[in-house]
Length: 200
Image (cartoon, rainbow, N blue to C red; front, side):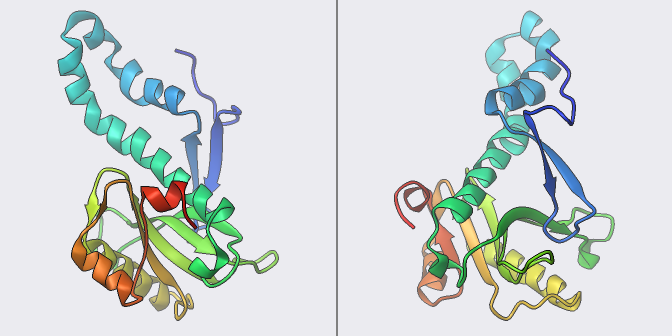
C-alpha cells in the first residue's frame, strides 16, 4: 500500500466550521479510505485467519472512519448542490464539519456536528444557518436533537448568533415518530435517503 501524503490529490483539507485553525485531512476516495483504515492494518491477520472473523473485528473501524464520514460528505454535498435555499432560510455558502470543546465533558470528546451550514458574508464566516448530525446506520431519535440544541447553547455562549439556526438530522436509515413529530412542529430539519437522492 502506498503511503498517503497530505498533499496528495486524494486527500482533502477541511477547515473546522467553528475553529478555523483546526484542519481535518480526509481521504476522498472511498476504496482507498477502506484500504487505509480497514485492510492495511489487518494485512497479517487476513493472511493467517478466517476473513469473516477479521472483517467482524474491522467493521467498527470501517463504520466510524470510512462509511460514516463518506455519508456525512454526501449530506454536505446535498446541502451545497441540491437543497432548496428555503430549507435553511438562505443560500448556503459553506457546509463543513464542526466541533467544540464541551465544558460538561472536560477531557472527553468534543461536541460535534457533521453538517454545519453557513450563509454568505464575504471574507468573514457567514450567518450560521444550520447545525446537523449525520448517521448513516442509525434510526435517529430525539436525543440527537437534544445534542444539537446543546451544541447551539455552547455556540451562543461563545457569541454566535443562533436565533435563526436550524437543527438538522441526516439519516441513512430513518427517524423515530417522535423526531418526525418534532419536524412537523418546525423544530428540526430531517433529511433521509429519499430526500438526499430524489428531493430538495
